[in-house]
Image (cartoon, rainbow, N blue to C red; front, side, top):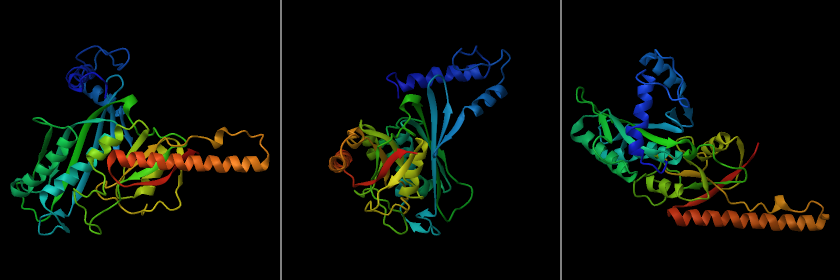
Length: 332
């Protein structure tokens, strides 16, 4: 986010643009071009043209370089109800249900502002327990205050299974958006181990899985470019999505030491693209004789491997989670 207060921006610049879109004020020369008789319908048309998908996120262009960023996730059949497939307390359902879209939001470079929970259960007692878990995860991401966590419950019809939907809304400055920022030569690393119920016991305090603080720590590392939480399609799928969003290809590591096709459930692992290569081989003298060239190539490859290991160790130290080399981003 920009250095200026996001709360100040939220109450001034955004409201000003919405007023302009509704025809209450003249459009700014840089942001909006509406006829003098602009109506709310015209405003809606313009807003629809400002909506775009970016991986699992929805982006809405606002004033100047700013975007509203929306992330969502859902869970069903997981909870304390009689017909739930996986039996867990409501509080843990709330923790994991909120964790996924919060991690997606933070990984994108946006600041989460509001979290909305749509619960297909009664408020007391199940809903209250789930909301407690949602609020805890929201506080980890810096979402606090009245109205920052809102939602609804089902209090008209008795329910026998748990259903939860969570939406997170945030703001980002365009230059801070991370999707597609991977660079040629970046290594792709998995932070955390993919785990998913019912095959695995997934607990909120498992030291092997990624969480909201993990993403926040990764976002502070200068050498980290793109960040992408892994979902049900697995590490390899998401790694290729990361490469494609940067206009690059992915060369997978032959044996990364973990199952790259396994579901990561509630984003139990996160991918990062990291600057690690020293580029030694690319800068070699092409006029060398064959033996000298082979020797220099071997030295460059060893240097590159050392740089990769050093980058992985640094990430592991920074976040305190298992880290594995998944592949490398290369030009298509």
